[in-house]
Image 1 (tube, rainbow, N blue to C red):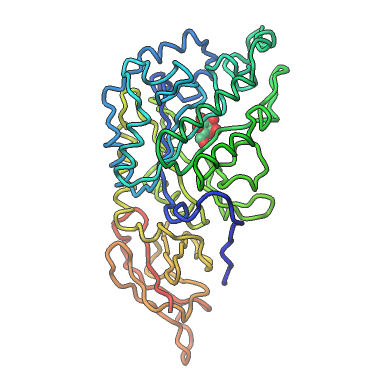
Image 2 (image 1 turned 90 degrees about the vertical axis):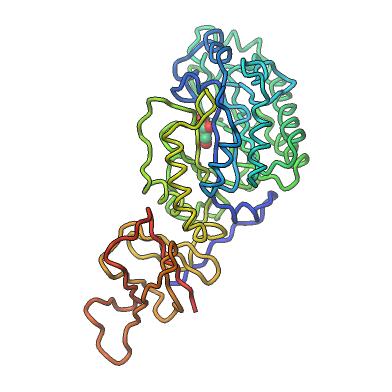
Length: 432
Ligand code: GLC
């Protein structure tokens, strides 16, 4: 029953705090929040620049209160945040000197990124920047298979006047600003590469288009210890974290058969940017189970919020964060610093482990008994985590036949008949 906990190879980034933290907030915010129908709306609807500008002209987040965002993140149990400094639309949340397409030139006239960074730092969270490699506004970014103008009849001719060399320099200048002017930055999240994409003769983009090696070297030079993601299209061992998105890994994430540090990013509903009419909001059970499942496989969860164009989290996002706040308030011990267990969890359960404490998360509450294979004789004490109430541990008798309600080779926990009033109950097992 004893499994070895996978150990990823050493990386350049500082992973110590990261594996302790386990839970972070992703924030996708830009002028697409005003369209309120996905951050890819410019691509999806092939909106020309001149028309898309209306979101910039009307971007006026009058309810923006980053202190509130940061408070909600901390209360939800999140230990770090990653925010879109620039998403694919090209709009910049900070007062960059390299473009006019930035928050300070919208009606709100503020450096939104700086205010967010200050607020989250004040709540004790670590700071990460998402930076889009893709840019649908920059005049030198060539039209490619994901560009809003990919179906333009003159795409090839228009591309002749675009110069990716200048765009590469633009990216380096911006990354230098981001990693110089905002103090210690813990994560940079470059997004993303698609070297094999093709559309009507247009080619995708990858490491040469971005000059990924130089970007990576610049990030590491400016912020030693910074954690860099895996979307630069470089050899996998050059990345610190691997980033499966929109699906739940069912075991420790591996690349070429080797375990890696990983962080899965997920949404409350099916969009990253604020989407008014999207309706697939996850239930409280799903939200908690995703976090537990992630940590039980040795990963981190980066859970996304898409603030509205008024600068607020909408009521559905607030409720989802409250779900985490309530649960984490009582169960954070089974998440922080925990990882995959050496034991195999019983049906409908997930283990996490920290030293000699094993946390048994019960996704479907059974009737009275829970049989734990591989743990016979190994448990010193057991309790429900949320209220520290004892759970009786029943070992098989050596001298008598096994009672019918026990299971050979297992130790049995005696549970209350009624499921405790928490979204996912956790039993804390103290090993001998
Ligand atoms: C995808 C999307 C993007 C989102 C990201 C988050 O790459 O392009 O909209 O920001 O995933 O992981």
